[in-house]
Amino acid sequence: MDREEVTEFLGQVPLLQCLPSSSIRRIADAVLVKRYEPGGYVAREGDPVDGLYIILDGQAEVSAPANTEEENRPDYVLNKYDYFGYGTNSSVHQVNVIAVSKLTCFVLPNQYGHLLQPKTIWNAEETPENHSLLEQILHLEPLEVDIFRGFTLPGAPTFRQALAAASKTVDCLKAVHSLHAIFLIAGDKNLPIIYQVHRARDGTSFATRKVEAKQKGLVIFTLIASFQKDESGFEHQAAIMPDVPPPEELLNLEEIRERRLTDPRFPMQYRNSAAKKKFVPWPIEMRFCEDSASQHKPSLNYWFRARGKLSDDPALHRCVVAYASDLLYSGVSLNPHREKGLKTYSLSLDHSIWFHKPVKADDWLLYVIDSPSAHGGRGFVTGRMFNRQGELVMSLTQEALIRRAKTPGQTSQTPRPKL
Image (tube, rainbow, N blue to C red):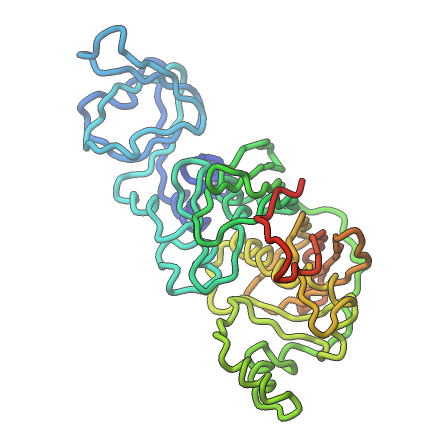
């Protein structure tokens, strides 16, 4: 097997899938190959643990120590992708492992054990504090295989990290190409979210994952994501990037806010009130292509990119653009209805994304949003994302609940399931 084949195999081992892709590639360089004949001992009770064993081909039987009572002997068989020698509190093997058939194993020697304990799920060497705030927001705590816990950081916009959880249960050579999320109940940003990943399918070219996000034992939303191994094929692009100013010629949100605070055309009361409000910069830098006179059109164009440095894990970059896609998206369906004093209430109902090409979330991307329809308390929006070369990298759709906000005299109710 060549290095790429070893990397692909290791990427399908559940234990390793929550590691950064860079760690898996380094493990691929470090593993040794060991072969055993039927009946041969792979590990003997009492022998030193010399590394992590991962079965590449064949079967092995695990047998309990000799002094275990017969009725309590938990013998079982290890198959392809199974492993042993990791996570034990002992420096010696507690059981015998015997080859049932011709057996081939990858062995990661103990001196490379640190590769199994990265700083984060996205970066092996550096902590999230050294990177973009987005990388901290998208960090998940693996609780066990296919179960993760996520938190909303203080001062950060609420984000559901289901795509990150799904991505960390898939071969690192497969990238998400589509996702479909349904929002069921409004979540509580002050509580952690538990992400349970279900492995719907693992094929040679494609993998499918279903993720349930839970709080207080309730599923607050679900996500279906499909992943594909890179391959060549037919190509065309009919979509044309709009002719808009480059981001270097546009103001970011902080600069727009500063101008409004000092613009004498705005009432002093408004400027004083705005200055007193706590301003927390978003982890996404945005630069709008149209001025405020266009805010009543059912469309919006703006450039965006992640603030700060991102690790080079391709899955992270796709998770970041998925995060960015929902910040202002559904609000565009409210633009034609905005008027002075109007207060509104909105919640995402469902959200779909198709990834067409590789994307770098810390480079400028143009987000083109249109709202072709609003009816029955629901607003519908479509979106396209282009890189600076004019390549269409993503297409998106979303439907959201859009309502007038309740007046103080109306009864306020806890958001209920919408499906």
